[in-house]
Length: 73
Image (cartoon, rainbow, N blue to C red; front, side, top):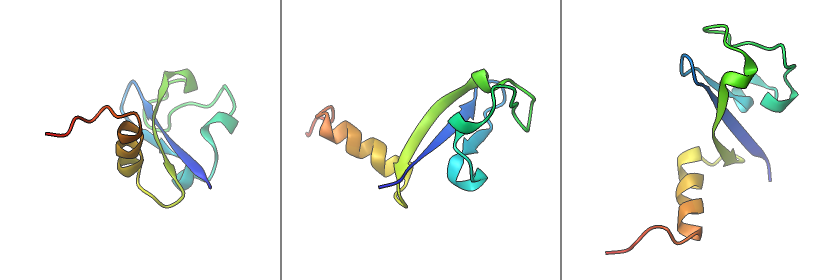
């Protein structure tokens, strides 16, 4: 199973998608900066992840369901 992460720039909200960029965010050098605003790599926050070709939204819902945080009415 392949996990693909997304990271969001906390300055300009640019989304770094590993699958689209072709490189893991953690493999980028510490000197790497946001291509939009020039913020340092440390300004990026983990936005989410997906398994294979499934969407991130589905995986977040699945994780919440697995933790039984969703209350059924």
